[in-house]
Image (tube, rainbow, N blue to C red; front, side, top):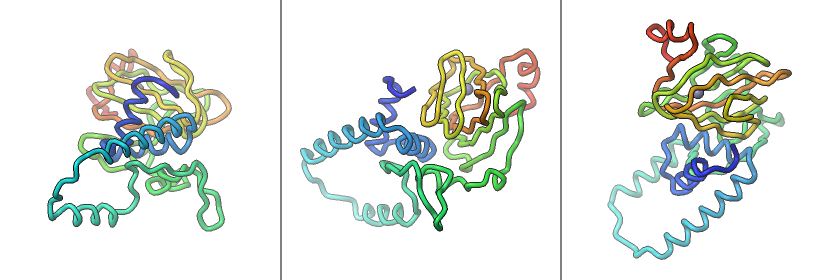
Length: 219
Ligand code: ZN
């Protein structure tokens, strides 16, 4: 998906710095990979800047400077950042776009993978205010178990591509799914598909075997 009201809402919220870190990370990585979204996002930022200029100045709380400095100290700030799609470190090109480099090692072997079906997942961020942030790796031509969602699921394609009933998603595309969507993403043949996925509630397996497994698995 490259243009839809739901994606625009995400870009606007990101420009306003209103997204929590897991979602901000996903959107910042999407922006590094997708030029049309980057252009829209820069327009939103410009509009936001003009609105700020029109606001009356107000007195700041004494703790505001300390809080701002603490945020700078904490390191990479994915709120509002537009990172490059390709970065170089120590003379070698990095695997991931700039925003993600701070969170995910280049080598997939350094992550702790847990398999399910033709797919595996690895936590990228510790659970954060109810969000789970994971890399999902689906073997070429294989499927993720059919499932629906108790909340929202954002999936950004980092490598390869996948298809489900709602469309075809390539590098840089985001799929937005919720409780109304029951799907079974299938990686295209030829290359493993690696995605960054952020969910704010558990998934629920819906296939015949998945329904039996639901009480025992947490995905
Ligand atoms: Zn899903």
